[in-house]
Image 1 (cartoon, rainbow over the protein chains, first blue to last red):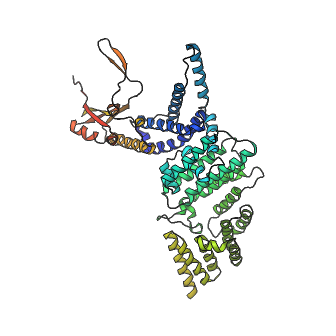
Image 2: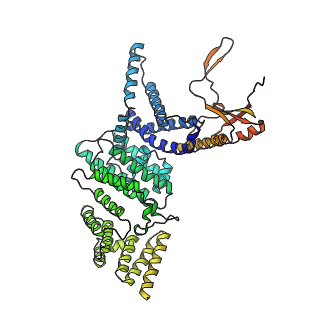
Image 3: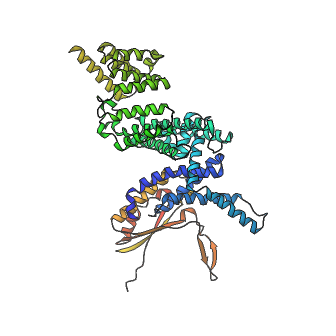
Length: 427
Length: 116
């Protein structure tokens, strides 16, 4: 048993988190979604019992099964307590007891656990819930994050997270939301919500450089785990699921190369591509391939193809910008947002059409407001002007971006750019 | 070296309003403690006691009662056997017990060994 200890903590950590979701799913299936809180309490008790026992150098051979067994026993205890057979003969009550036990036993079969987990994901992503509540509820119930962890990961106050969870649970019990797998059109639209939430969770982990490294990675890993879980169930075994999964793989492959030792963002062009995780890229291609079965082209497909394009190039200069541009054209048609247009303009500039790129950027709806409020737009526009040999305009926009960004690293980066522009100007 | 028994008393984690992170942090401290004692070659064995199934058999008629229902801080949660040269050293080892802050305590007793 001793040799297990080196990884015991990690084991317990992941085990608690992953098993919590499974256990809550099975228990809410048994006790009903309106008893979600009770299910969470039972799971909590099971973990405490585990901690109490395992601390004496007693990690079981199969900790996951051990935990599930404790949860099952606790569930049976609760049911026995609630069931009263005093009005029946001993024979009949014994028979009824046996039947109950058998019924409960069914829910602990692997296939049923998978169903329950999926149903719980669908419930947490109920379309009537606010997006931020869906995210909090998903992380709490399915991913086993504590309130403190959710707050840390989402850069929110613990009290705010508590409020979101409370609101979501209130809604679920007041609306009598049931655990189920929607059918027909409802299924597709519910799946869409699930994709949105999973991608949101992934991006929370991927894009925020403020939260601690570990918790951010956990968020990404969790989103990927749930997406994989979805793909392994007949309900979620769909091209769209694979498109999202491949997109996450491509992004996650670059996770380590995006930050320098001071936790500052490194731009794609400057990233050390040898640090990209080749195994994840391979998996990305595998899922992207699977996502092409069927004839539905989604935003996730295009975004994944764009990410794949970057992964294909061994250096930034070798990127196939023409192909990227046509992918962005496609993406713009499906998702006409300012940020997509911004990226499209950058790629356009790399195909040698910087003047057109500037025109394109300036044609974005409400661009004046965006340039007053969001530093990204000024930073990119400045960059485009610099590339187009218009140093004065470049400097103006870099200056504006410096005023707008809260990040010191960004400010430093922008100041360097101004210096570079000036040196070209005077040389 | 002599052998000593550590008898751990204190509330069970289930009885404390304890977050999973705290429980996990304590479990980790225990793992580290056992690992440390094992590395030093003084850890012999240790076991938890099952809480739910305790009975007390007592009296000249050997009457069986449920229990022991001690107060939670006197509940015996488990034991270790460790090696030490003397009681003072054993007590020093016992100070590594991770659950003092949870109201737990360690009884340190030398195990009698027959040399003949």
